[in-house]
Length: 583
Image (tube, rainbow, N blue to C red; front, side, top):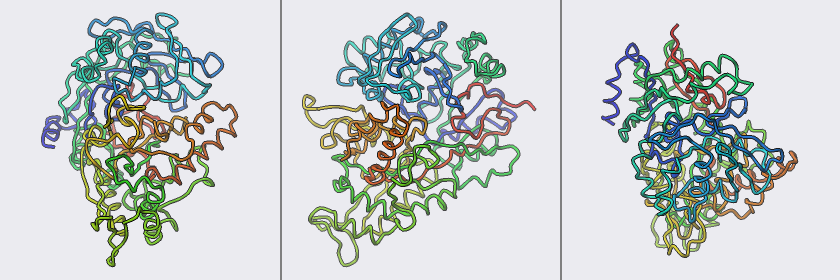
């Protein structure tokens, strides 16, 4: 990426960094329209300009940003109260409860999900009502004491009603997505620590200090009691940088060289490159507990290999891939083998319910070959050379798409391809940037008559798998990490029901997952919740809708003068109070 490297070269050394904080990413954001996209790259950039509803501290406490949230006492009705000093940009006036209720009802709950809201599934069946100028009420279908910690309102954004109205009236999702105010965050006002400056696609996103930031006007009693005086003062004086930028740099070596030369403040470090920075006094390498799980997805939609719809076929492929080799050697021991959708350190993980594939005795290419041959459709079989042939007599060839940007991702993808080669399968690779992967491979659309579409889960699950497909065909996908929500594992229903908004791979479980998740959400019996979650994660480990590859820490390199980061889960909740150490 010559352009990205050129931008970095212009930063100079660390003596010229001044009051600019720069992060280097492997890929850019796809869009600033948070309604349709919610990946980390997009959220990181949005969070510079807009704070969101509220966040969660490292102690699992709710920290109000734009609003506070309160349980009325039955875990079914919650009241959200906005701060009184929130102002939209572009003359949209004060942020009020009306903005939130309008957005939830007309966009997230809009007819036919016209706006392609990724949050549509989160808000289905939820009743919202404006109860005051700065207050609205959320009534859930069933009690759920964990709801404030789930990603419905936590970390969510809003747009002004006046911006949305013409698009709601016309049901024009494409027009909303292309609106310059949306893509340039012109409505940001005083809602975040920075204001949008420019976005050079596939290169650089720049925001500058917002002198009108609402946090600067808060008094000490506007903060929760658990916040220390020092933390209050830090928020009142935030942010501490005149400029904050994200550089999209495709080449891993370029990003790491920039960190080593002091041209950037922060970037992720692949496990294979940690030794390069360990022991250096000018760079801090931190291992931050990470709730995200690395998967290899099996495309069970109409444009994937149809055999992947058979559970035993997926099991065979997972059995043939040595996950210990991946975690211990490719990832250099900075990862743990995974077998289901929860980290082993989670209180909800029950080893007795988990079916393993790809570790120890369950890594068995010979048994995988037998299992595969016994469960493929009629016409498939092996020739004398061990090549797997399809009914036309051609070798089975699968396309694996992976996100480029880190050497370990590419190495792992190629290793898994080689492992599947031992089953007589040829694997062809497609390397794309993450912001290309989302619209072209993850997002899918209904292929039939619009009137015949029975349901949509949003842009990543736009209807039953027999009639919805992504723009580009694929069979296997690597390079996307899923949040396992160890705080609130019921939130993982966003992935594992047929109509789930993140079920882009077309998984149709035999088990009644919706009922199981409902039990977890509504039960007040801790033992029942634990048993039901154990059953859910057991089903997933056996079904193998994806290959659960590894859980790894987030390894981040910071310049030594950055004061704020910690090696704890959720450490970025107060990122906007971080400073440069003057010592």
